Image 1 (cartoon, rainbow, N blue to C red):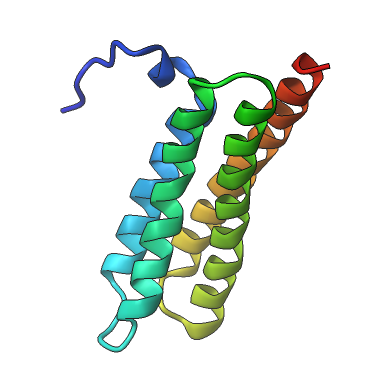
Image 2 (tube, rainbow, N blue to C red):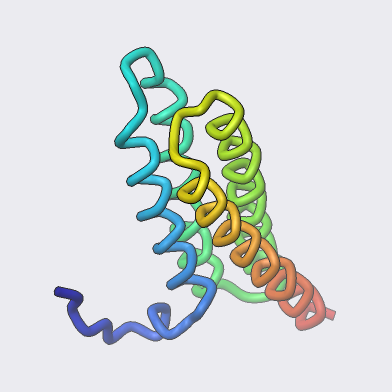
Length: 123
């Protein structure tokens, strides 16, 4: 069951996609074998950082907003690389990896547009 969200942040497609990316990464890393605790932790931190920084950016203006979105973008790109490593190491089913990378790509594209928009507002 999903509860009804009342915050404006939950109306943002990029935020909802970032939360779905967080869920997808959580499912992927849950299946990692022993010995991958560091990798699991790194991916969880990166996937958590994306929605956190989007939320932070929404509460800011101009360059500060763009900076928060840039951090989120960097974390999304880090996840794309991490998911490539997951695929190479055979740590998760390929379809799950591809779906998570597609989400990360979508989030990255939306963040890129939001960064441009925030930077244009500061001028």
